[in-house]
Length: 202
Image 1 (cartoon, rainbow, N blue to C red):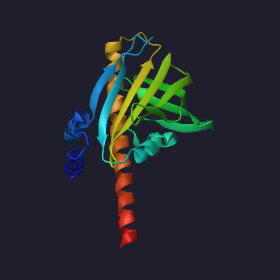
Image 2: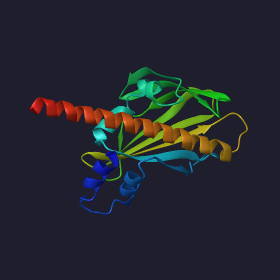
Image 3: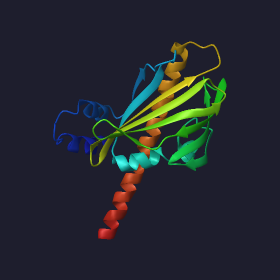
Image 4: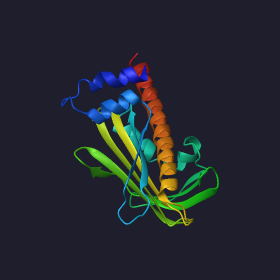
């Protein structure tokens, strides 16, 4: 049913040519990819997914950094340490390489910034941690008033001498898990909000 409800409004898009959204809606699962990061020998691992919820709902879920450990698989800890000037410092702890190592990082997430015509981007960058570098980029864009394309790209440069061909697939997998969990949480919140609104009208 989720797939059907996602496809109906897509067919009525004004430009009728959002191929990415159509593909992700039909796939339902996340689409993994990787991208080059200037100055890094490791490619960031990414994942894109279609969300049956408005961008405002998705943004709120993405920004609840302290709750990541409660619903995103493999996150051991996620705790907000400080907030200032709309920036949020978060302590994150995540096992990688099938538990062979654990990454911890104090990461600063910037407030949402405009991206493209009507999209938004949230960037996170390590302040300190046990890796050489850790960065995250969330990208959100509305497909229409009730649907959103969400992407996450992760870069983790380990101190261990591991090649990118080993690390990047792990990052793609982690991004997949994260956007899938965020989609599910966003859709649940949107459905509950719609249900509550309907109950009030009745």
